[in-house]
Structures are given as C-alpha cells and as structure tokens.
Length: 456
Ligand code: SF4
Image 1 (cartoon, helix red, strand yellow):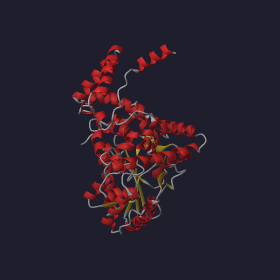
Image 2 (cartoon, rainbow, N blue to C red):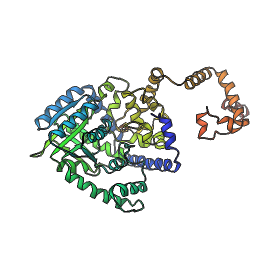
Image 3 (cartoon, helix red, strand yellow):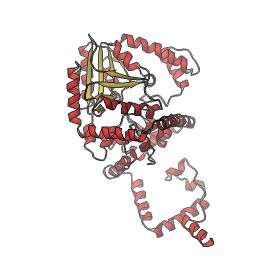
C-alpha cells in the first residue's frame, strides 16, 4: 500500500484538479466561518458539546445500556458487534431472515469502515447507496474521498460520463440540474424496489432510545419509510445523554459541515411502524481501545462534520484518497493509527501542525496535539527509514548547538547562492523536488539584527 506522500504525489499530477479541489473545499470552509460567526455564543456552544461528549465517554457503558433498554422497550431489536466482521454478519443475518435481496443505504461512514457493501454483494445482496455523492463513487467503484462530500474529487463533467455509462443518460456537458434529475429517477426506482433500508446514526439518545439521522437529500427517510425493514448501524460513541442535548449538536453539525444553519432533514426515529421491523446494530470495532488511550480518547468526540478536512492545507492539496483510510484528513490521521499503527504510520506526518483543524472542530478535539503525540509514538514503535532516522539525528545535533547551527546556516546560504539548481534539488532534497527555494541571503537573521542595531 502506498504511504500518504506517495499517494498524494499521484493526486498532484493533475495540477488543475488539485487547485480546483483546494478552492472548492476552501469555499466550504469560508461558508462555515460565516455561519459560525452569525451564532452568538458559538465558542460556548463548542465547549458545551465537548463537555457533553466527555461526560458520555466517562460513563459510556452505562449510557449504552440505558439506550438499549429504551430502544428494546420501544420495540426495536438491538444487536452488539465487537468488530466489522460481526457487524457484517449481523446485518446479513437480518437480511436473510427477512428474505431481503435489494437494499438501499443512506450515507454511513461506519458501514464504509466495515466494508459492508462488498460483503453483502458477495452474499448475493445488491446494496445501493442513495446519497448522491455516495452513489457517484459507488458507480465509479471508488471509496468516498470525504466524509460529508464523498465525491468532492470528481468534476461534474466526470459525473456526466459516469452517468452516461451506467444510467444511460444523454451527454449534457456536466449540467448539474439534468444529472441530479436523472439520479433522482434512477434512485426512486431503487427505493420502490428495496426489501430493506440501512442507515447510519448521527446521534442516539440514551434517555429515550431515539436516534437521529441527518441528511440533505432526505434519502434516509425515503429508504426507511418505504422498506419493511430498517437497520440502523451506529458506533458506540454516537450516544448523547438527553434529547435536550440534540439542540447543541444539531446547531453545530450543519454549520461546521457545510455552513448551513441546519441539515435539511434531521430525522428522528423511535420505533418501527406497524407491520415493519427496526434493528439497531451497535458497533465497537476498535473504539473501546481508543477510549483506553488517554491521549486519544477525545478523538471519539467526533461528530463527523468534515470541517477539519475542509480547512486542512494538506488534505485540500492531497485529496481524501491519499489517506487510504475510511476517515481521511486530520481526524482520520488520529483514528487510523489506532486501528493499525504500521499501515497508517505515515498519516500523522501528513500535517503542518498549524492547528487550523483544532480551531474549527465543533467539539473541540485537540487534533493537532494528538497528531503530534502519534508522531512520537510512531517514531518509537514503527521502524523508520535509514535516511529519515539519520537526517533527524543530524538535525538534532545541529539544532542543539548554536555554533553548529550558525556554521551550517552559513554553508546552506552560500550553497543556495552558488550551487546549480540540479545539485540543490537533487534526489535527497524532497522539499525542493516541487518547490523553488529562495536565493540564499548574505546574512543570517542574527547578523542582520546586530547590524541594524549598531546603525541605530
Ligand atoms: S474531528 Fe472535529 S472537525 Fe473533524 S470531522 Fe470530527 S467533529 Fe468535525
């Protein structure tokens, strides 16, 4: 598997696409800022959300049991899955029990994490993703590249070609209205034919056993209202204590995600309609382990708004697929090493540590601090390349002595001024591979500062 920088290099081959991807996400980040600034007490709201989540995590087992009790009382069947494999088996068993062959699914990062679609397909069950972005990537046989905007890496012209191939649409030069209308017709048929609907869960209320699913297209509702069986899949961290807390999270979620005051559909589910069945699958899949890591447990506060991705300069320039992980971007770079430290060891290094992610996170996760902590752990636990290890040691020696620092500075400045570019940007200089370094100044900052003072 390619590490992050190798995969990012691939994405960077199409410079136009990179610029457009960067701009599109920055536009969303800007909308988030405008929406957040309109809310009085936004910072207090973030703190409150963070405190509610910290409270939930400190008593998670109790909240989960309370939620299960209420859900059972409401007539919902509750299942527990320790990992992705068990989650998939449970979902398959429910579908088999109900002789379901056609399933519609609304956006759920958990089912992506568990690779549910290919699993069901291998067992003869067709699963159609009904969120438009998700359907686009499903037709393209790709993974979502963003948790809120799954097809953000695709241009409308590419969607045009994809729909021509799979849905038999006419060429339309990427006309978004036409493409959306065609997708609607196509999905409507799938909704009407579905034997079961799968949704994710944004918030599960311990006090009542209710759960809330947020979508902008109403596709979760279409699926759950038409199919005789509704399966809702949730991670154990989705619990909130009381219904009154929903107001805090719903106000934060949409504004942080897309700059909307509220998600178009915030659908509340409590019990199955007469003659239908409702199941909830509660999944751990490594979350308990993350809970047991004091430095990283706050990452479980995440409400999957995607704001940290939209603001991250590395994500915007490298694309979501370069993270090779279901949850990309800054928060994914904290969660993924917890699942497999070796496989995802490059991710915490895919950050400038500028802290922009931390400052937009609606639940105040200290994202850049956690990335920095992962780096320290990974440097010790995962074998590093000889070049990296030696260079870091050398830099450590240079930085620890002012005299050595000054001497190396002099050599570097002279080299920048006098050596040809081919030498300066030779292979070991990864930084210089894609960037022109400035001309070396004649003086160091210290020398310049001293001269300036002397002349005053
Ligand atoms: S870490 Fe924070 S900003 Fe990033 S997706 Fe989660 S809630 Fe949103």
